[in-house]
Structure formats: structure tokens, C-alpha cells
Length: 339
Image 1 (spheres, one colour):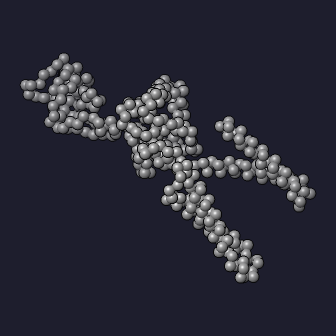
Image 2 (cartoon, helix red, strand yellow):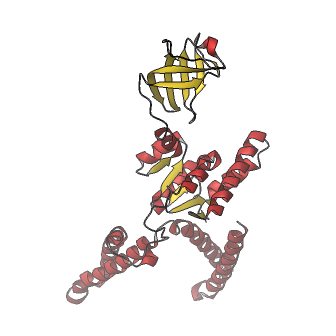
Image 3 (cartoon, helix red, strand yellow):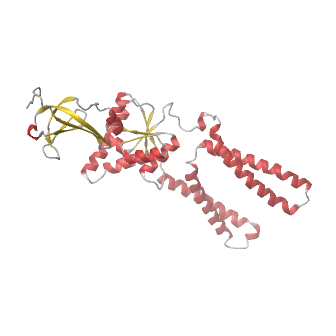
């Protein structure tokens, strides 16, 4: 921020002084005392406009800028050729300049639009393509998946390929959470920073911290905008972000979906042995958990709390929060209850 203010101040000063000198040297305006100050104001306004234009241009890919520029000059050349017959064969001096402006505006606009749109169809040199991340699409990490921590374990397995991108605004949000006055938030934020450090130390994937930021947007919107610019995937645990990103055509890697798909498959009628840990919500129910964290609901098992029992699967319920397995105590004589 300090660097932007310094550069903007220098540019504004140069333009203001130059505008003052230009305005005071115009022959027809030298007799007016305000000529120099008017030029200074115009120069300062142009400096502010240039800074605002820079904020817009830096979001546009280089290929689009070059294509639009080439198309603009091509359109202006066609406009010059189209106005040539009127200059040579029609003695209408008052019509030549308006006609040339008219043709330049039409053909210049068409050329600029076609050039910027069609540049993607040309096989351009590598330096026009923006940052390269190899054959694998880069993956942008959001705050939720970093704090969750399982992304570090997933990186260690080697199933993820390519580059991991942590944008500046995600890192800033992590730092804000780590500096929170709330103990729980502060712990979660510091855990997220530790997870990033752990991923860096693995040296399995390249972790890149992008200094890119997008003004006047919330973090989720910035993530999607950056993913569209880089043609990247978003790695997240946020259900709503996943849905909105998919609607915008962005590929999403949801760690929760991956964890649910890797849980052990069970079928109705299958037998399993579980330890009943606590009472369920309904009367007489007992609750147990599998090794992968899946909740097991056992009917008529209240008296067996704290013991291991053999149960038979009756049904499996898949929800957005995970999977629940409903079972019942095995009624035959082979069921052995262990304390």
C-alpha cells in the first residue's frame, strides 16, 4: 500500500507540474493567470485516470491486450483505405475529416474487439500465456481447507499433482483469524499457518503465494474470479462455495466429498463389531463410531453402553454432513458381548 501511494504521488506530481508548464506556454492562454493552474489540474486528473486504468489493465491477460492493439491498428488502416477514394475523387473538403473519424471509429472498434476475442485461437509464444503450472491445472486453496488440515496428509500421499496456490487475500484472512481475540478462532488460524508451513516442508508440491488481490469482492468471489483467470481448480471444504463455483464452470476438489467416498462400504445384512459409546437421541438407541468416524446407530442397545457387540446393518443413510449406518443387535446365540 505504501509503495502504491509513493508511486501515485510521484506520477501525480510529474503530471501536475508538466500540465502547469504546458498550460502556461500555450500562446492564446498566456494572458490568463489561471492557464497554468488549469493545465496542472488536467495533468493531475490524467494521472488519477492512469492509475485507475492500470487497476483494470492488470486483470486483462497479455494475449488479449496485444490482440486488441493489433486489431485496433488493423481497423484504423482499413478505415484509412476506405476513406481514400473520398479524399481523391470527391471534392468535399468539409466531409473528409468527419468521414474519416466515422470510419475509424467503426473499423477501429471492430478490429479491437475481434483481435482481443480471436487471439486465444492463435498459438502464441509461451510468454503471452501467463504463468505456467505444467500439464496439471493449478489448485487454489481456500481458508477452510487449510484450517481443516487434511490437505497436508493428502499431499503426503502423492495423490495431488501440480501446484498449490495460496492467494494473498486467503493468507490475510488466515492471519486475521490467527490474531483474533477469540481463543478458538486464534487456535484455528494458527493451525492453518502451521499446515501451510508443513506443506512447504514436504517438497512434494510447489506452493506459490500469489500477491494478486481483487478489490471490492468477498473472499469466495475473489477465489472464483482468480480460478477463472488462471483456469485453476479450487480446493475447499465449503459446500456452498463448491456449488456456486460449479455453476460458474469452475472445477472444485472438495475434501469432504473425497473423505466420504473413501469410507468403508457396508451393505444391509452385513455383520460388524462395534463398541457402544453413548445413548442416542431416540429412546433405547446406542451410538458407536467406526474407525473412519462414521456414526453407527444401534437400536435397543441402551443396556450395552460401554460394551462391544455384534450388530447387523439394517440401512445406510447418506447426508451432506456424512454417512450414518443404522443397525440392530444380533439376536442369535452367536452374539458375544464384551465389556
